[in-house]
Length: 188
Ligand SMILES: CC(C)(COP(=O)(O)OP(=O)(O)OC[C@H]1O[C@@H](n2cnc3c(N)ncnc32)[C@H](O)[C@@H]1OP(=O)(O)O)[C@@H](O)C(=O)NCCC(=O)NCCS
Image 1 (cartoon, helix red, strand yellow):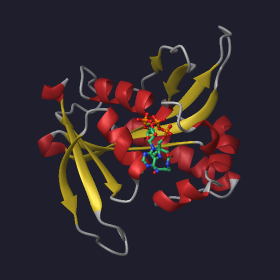
Image 2 (cartoon, rainbow, N blue to C red):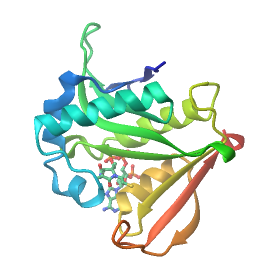
Image 3 (tube, protein in one colour):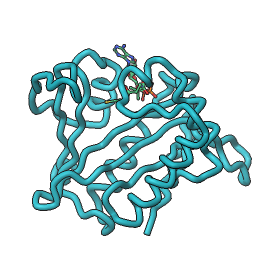
């Protein structure tokens, strides 16, 4: 089971469609991963078409197992039949089934940043994930980012993820101090 979500256009920003990643997105994925900011803050870096296709296969398996629900964020033009182009990514990863909790992650392509795409996409996914969907029933979403990643912190605030704690660095996996933000389904 998968899901397709959409976000209405605003006066200054186009409509967004969110759907599972597909093999045909590999080229856009590699292009997005060339960006230094994305490489700085993500643990996974995709440099070749082969790596991107393998990563997309992993995302499909994540949906099939109901443990990793990832969306390509597509910017759509005005045309009804426009398939859109991938400009971002949002993922909901199962963490603790006993607590019905998951962690969200996200990025946007360098050329579309600052247009509200990450926050509009994260908002619709958060509502969906904490709502009535039955693929991964959830009561809580966690959002972790490095303290110095101010853009990510702003996206968390805009999507009403409350700052819960400051986490110490844990190298090598987490070389920077982190912020843990939380959004509960009771906050909806
Ligand atoms: C963080 C990221 C997803 C934001 O994407 P985006 O599409 O630009 O996000 P939005 O446009 O919805 O909002 C960004 C907000 O952060 C603010 N912002 C961006 N960079 C900032 C910075 N260096 N310092 C402070 N605020 C910053 C913007 O002004 C905007 O806030 P505003 O609407 O109040 O003006 C994007 O920069 C990115 O992909 N970064 C690399 C990957 C990453 O860090 N992912 C998160 C890992 S936890």
